[in-house]
Length: 86
Image (cartoon, rainbow, N blue to C red; front, side, top):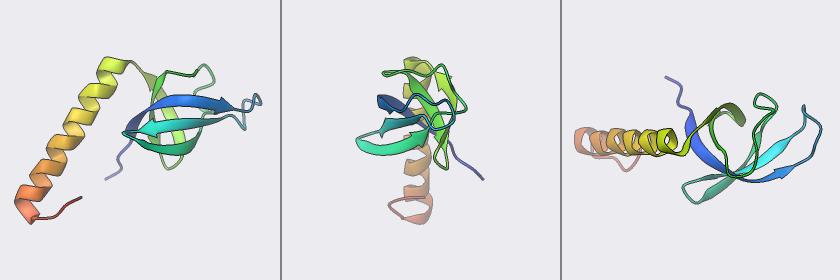
């Protein structure tokens, strides 16, 4: 199973569409994410990212809902397997 995570673009580096990198905040963890698949992305947009690439731009409400769902899954894993993470 693959999981894409929602994050907020805090900074964009570069103007070349194929090398545009965003500093994306995933709940306090900042990662460099390639924005070439979402050329219209801008600072303060939320994106869904997987393996270092932003795949889609989403709105804030959808991002918050996805984060809630991820927390529910993590809670289920803790209850079911007694672990701290998936």
